[in-house]
Amino acid sequence: MLKLIKCELWKLKRRRFVSLTLLFAFLFPIPLTYMMTTPSMASRSDTPAEAFDGVFNFVLGYGVQFLLPAILGILAAILFFMERDNDTFKSLRTIPVTSRQMIFAKITVLFLFGIFFSIASLGATLLCSAFLPHAFEITGLLYKLIMSIEMGIFITAGTLPLIILIVFFSKTYVFSVLLCIFYSVLNMSATSLFEVLPKAVTWILPGTLTTFWSAGNMVSHGIDLNIKAMTDLGLIPTTLQTTAILAGTSIISVALINIMYERRNRE
Amino acid sequence: MNDVIIETRDLTKQYGEQKSVADLNIHVRQGRIYGLLGRNGAGKTTTMKMLLNLTCPTFGEARIFGEDIRTHEKQILPRVGSLIESPGFYPNLTGTENLRIFAELRGVKKKNAIQEALELVSLPYRDKKLYSQYSLGMKQRLAIALAVMHDPELLILDEPINGLDPIGIAEVRRFIRELCDARGKTILISSHILSEIALLADDIGIIDHGVLLEEASLKELERKNSQFVHFVVSDAEQASQLLLRNFKTQNFNVENRHDLRLLDTSLPIAAINRCFIENGIEVTETHVCEDTLEDYFKKVTGGVGIA
Image 1: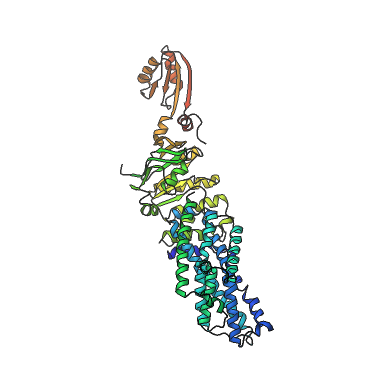
Image 2: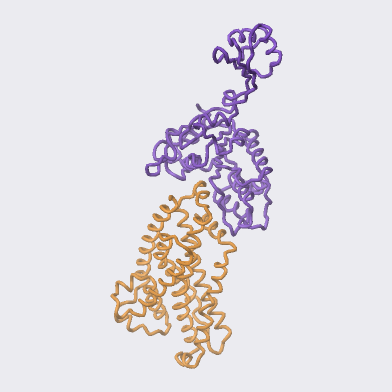
């Protein structure tokens, strides 16, 4: 399996989108860091450490929660369309590599990218904050690193249902991009409508679930966030609940992707 | 037969009502080149796909190295190198990088396997040219390099000379022959080009509309289609006696009262004609005829021929 993962990574060599991913990691940290230095936002933080926590929270909320599913969706389209577009499936099958092995390798690559992007976003946040030492004080770095890795894993797991659709429709990249954007907007809208939506709906939508989990987790680690309304409604899931829901989603998604990928390649 | 590497038993592939391959029984013997000859759409590629378990047969079975491919895929496929239809590689990688991926997945241990495979098909090793910039011929060569890179015992090559220039065709033909003669590889090759199969194959299977019309060695087929001299004479029986007595040959056929077919074309035709006339036999016509393989294939495919 390690060989397969290594080969999946090799296949992405010279793919511009992959190198652009690193740039995308700076897309939100730069404006959000600037935003936090504006007088109205700066006044909300009592200390530079709180200001940095605020930037980190925003970057997780927008950069990772919003942007990462879109990036993963496009990357999934690249990975899953690759064999179809280049007619390499037959060469892999005659090694023999099974569809299931291929899917596991491709999904592992997605998880690796999810983690990489989250860490890169944290790195970008650190870099931007380091330029403004008077406004920000970098604290709790280890926790933030672990949190970023967890978010990378959770968001990737939450994006797998989207990948079912990408593999099922197996259309163009443009279609995949549109699907990803729709998915991100859907999750963000559900998050903002948490007060009117049933709890089950907010927990089924992976984006909303991880937003609630990350908010609760950050508060329990001393980051000052206002989550009273969510707590009162019992919407903050534990890490175990979040892991269980996303693991269930992932297992069902991988099984469906496998069925569809096999069927598509047999056609 | 113990030396049969590929054996199909009533192999059939049906798409809806249409039979792409019907009750196919082919036998590819060890250390020989088997040419599967047929027109475009005859069922060659479908047959090869079934042999590689890329598509499931509707009926029948394909046995490779004595085992059913569907149940022993993991044991069989590592011993097989293949090229099916057009070459498929990653366009953003170089030829060497593409081969490295497949070498890694195949677990090729030999250090210079990639370099050797590329050199075999006259492609540069560690070249910076991306696959997307390759010509059709280069793509085909790379596909052949991929098929031989892991030193398989059996090669299944579907139209391997497609897209190659005449020099490339000759090179590929030479090294396919060499793989068989020097390294003892068994090769199943398909083509719609009769001359290629005739130049390369030891055994030939003719497939048309999914049906195997004939399976024989090239020598057998050539025997059936050798040159002959056709005499139209007043008495074929008497003429045959003269051939037997005066020219010491039995290599002839008396077709009917007037037609005699002399299969040994090395005999002096003018002397035979003189002998016939001197012995009172009227010679109306004398032709040197050559029933080519193509003529034969036209006959077995119902008159339309190959390609």
